[in-house]
Amino acid sequence: MDFNFTEEQVLLQNTVKNFVKDKVTHEVVDHYDTSEEFPSKLMDEMTDLGFLALPFPEQYGGIGGITLDIVLLLENISYGMVSLGAAYMMSVVFGGMSILHYGNEEQKREYIPKIISGEIKTAFALTEPNAGSDAASLKTSAVLDGNDYIINGNKVFITGAHQADYLLVAAKTDKSVSKYEGITIFLVKTNTPGIDIRKLEKLGMRPVRTNEVFFEDVKVPKENILGGLNLGWPNLLKSLGNERVTCGAVCTGGAQAAVDYAAKYAKERVQFGKPISKFQVIQHFIADMQMDVDLARLLTWRASWLLSEKMSCGKETAMVKVFASEAYSRVANKGVQILGGNGYMMEYPLQRHLRDSKFFEIAGGTSEIQRNIIAAELGL
Image (cartoon, rainbow, N blue to C red):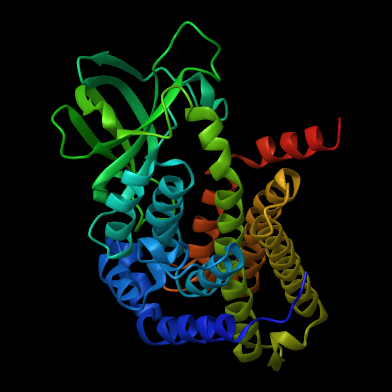
């Protein structure tokens, strides 16, 4: 792996940093967190800057970036606002890149340019009340009726469903086979009759609302099958590497922001006649925090390079997901401790990092599931 970035990658990083500095201020982030409003305006500005085009080939209106480019973008976006990085992931990574990886040519030409332009947004609907870590045990069904499929079921913890124009819905299309077979992914318009989207109250990541989605006799044209009939599970596996690595990038960006804020606060906060940054215990806290961030970054960069080189890296991407999410949580917790009473107050950003960081230890595959994957890859 080469740690020398190309001129294009340096330009990308600088462009994103300038965008964050100008547009993603503390006041803006606090507004979205408090109001729980989806950051549509910021997403529109990212669209204008071409950020949404980054992962897609030029033939669909994209820029043709590699996985490392996406990681660099997301780390710097999330440094300013973690939930904005997650909003990018929902539509571009979960939606657009899934269509790119296993959609047919007609679907790629139909949907990817619209995702790039911001005309449509997507969300992924997989998890169910009784199918969380055991995601393949889903009960939502899709039954063929002429030229349509009729979907019935219930999804839960579907982030961003309320603002999506399309849901990528995993449904059981053949109940006679094992749970890993007979699953199909459908592109479903959210304004289709029979869909009911309800808000779930949650601890953090408030701007990207999480929802429960109900499907009652929802009619979907069979041409909206994404990736082939009964091929949903193997297609989902194709997306996992990008999901885990981009989660790592978002967590790394958020964790670095937490370290930098805590260090700045420690230099300014005076107790016992000197800045608390002069006390060894605080210095060790911040040193440990930065080591966590650097390790998360290196794991993320390595896995993104392996993905870009199309090399097998299931173990490495699982390591990214579990380490980066837990590192973010550790860093946020220590940051709150450094701020003391102020760390517990809503006007300071460390409490938000603490709330947001927990999301990533659960969403996208829990830390326990990631450890199972790593152990299996080690032959245990």
